[in-house]
Length: 296
Image (cartoon, rainbow, N blue to C red; front, side, top):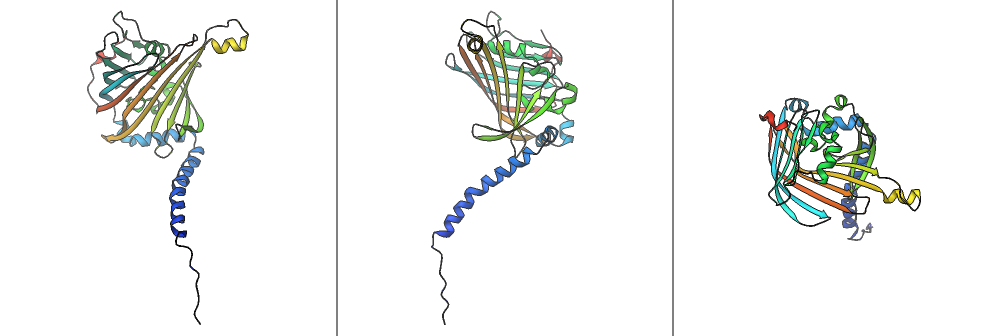
């Protein structure tokens, strides 16, 4: 007697393979998110610092200079793009953050911190500061805590939370631009009006984004308290994005940096500008002239 075996249709196996191809990335992403959801802020920071380099490599870092090309763009409230040069020097708690342009009427930005005090240079021929410069001066903790520039800073904020007397709160997984990211809220000492959120890749724990927000009420006008309060709020938002990570001297750092500042005035006027930086040189333990960190 011949045993007859009924074969499945030829399309069955390819369909199953396609389903597996679709499901595996989803399953891996779900596992990564679930794992991250169980972490404490302290655990996230440990994994993040390990993503930069070993404890030995990090402890040997004394200073860093990042140099590169930049493009300055006016996104809202005007138009245009300008080529610029970028330099970020840091040594311990000190930093010198420079965007230099050759445009008429706008010279770029320079922020200096000597560890305790912050100086913001005038960026126009008459020496007055840009809206962004005024924001940095009013929220100088971004420089004093070495938040601005992220892991490019030789003493970036998460390397020593305790000495900064800051606190961290785990905010869970947030979807930003279709991407799941681990979110930490950074609570600086004495800056209750500033919201600071730090975002990390749930698989590598690399710091890929920071968002800083401030909302200021400027009084109540006519037409009812609630409606007028909405009209009278001035909003400030600063966003940093980091990508294209590469390893130098045993330290893995981003080589692409995007900084966007948005100002929404109570009058309804909005201005948004962006600096896009491509790092050409990342030099660790360089000798830096002390005058670079002199606050004017």
